[in-house]
Image (cartoon, rainbow, N blue to C red):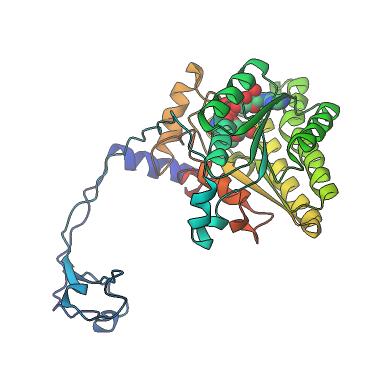
Length: 366
Ligand SMILES: NC(=O)c1ccc[n+]([C@@H]2O[C@H](COP(=O)([O-])OP(=O)(O)OC[C@H]3O[C@@H](n4cnc5c(N)ncnc54)[C@H](O)[C@@H]3O)[C@@H](O)[C@H]2O)c1
């Protein structure tokens, strides 16, 4: 939530970074594996001069036989850095899909965190966040990736590139997420090609920004709701029906936004915010209805991300404000949703449904 106090605090943090308070460390006699809390009053912060460490290597087999397994490390009073760390976008020249042989050797926890053998549909997969989540699913073991997007040229290019770089089966369907009939035909075609989908990642969406509610064109308002909210419904309905018909458990991931939970500053964007709040509540409702079919529904709610959606000169000044209000002092990278997407698609999140996970560099903390 945005308050005058939070702005003041955020700008103070940026303009006058305070030097960290350095306190003398409490005296401490080293004793291996000692519990230290009892030596201090409850209210005192425990400040160690040395930190005891116990290291169990595969050779030591957990038995404290050799002295070298226990040692201590000195604690230096190093001022924490106030400089923001520049995020470097990952190089993605090649995509290495998880190989069946490697998968068989992975421990059970890691196997569950993969999407081995799954058929995954990604809408808005031609570019941006959707495209990068599709790549991540390809790396994490998907059997086939299917991109749905309204942009023919970008979609074709993206599918060809993903196939060439990964060697996986990749298809592109030119589908507008507002077009129920086209969606149903495309999903049926996916079933015929690869079998019923296991996962839907619904990332297709648009944003209108800097439009005051009092002058918002109702036709534009309806269009945005139709793409962001009705599109989420039509896609979920078609894919959900295919999962039910095949008796297959599934995972539906709806890309909402932190704007579904907070009001952005300084731009006016009531329609976008309302559409994403609708997506979150729709996702929760669907999760409750479809748990009986073993279909899970969760939302990913990104903060400000550095994608084409935001790479417009008109937003340059606002981006400075957004960064200043984000504890991590940056916009999200285009691949910053990848890990969460794979986790929600995987069986590792099997008990998770109806959740809305905000991933925003801390923006919504203020
Ligand atoms: N970029 C951000 O800062 C940000 C923040 C929060 C949430 N989001 C959400 O993440 C999702 C992806 O955003 P992005 O930044 O990757 O955007 P993007 O514009 O880079 O990609 C969106 C994709 O969706 C496709 N698309 C648009 N309308 C469509 C339609 N009617 N039918 C089918 N495809 C359509 C576009 O062709 C494009 O390929 C959106 O839902 C957006 O609201 C983005």
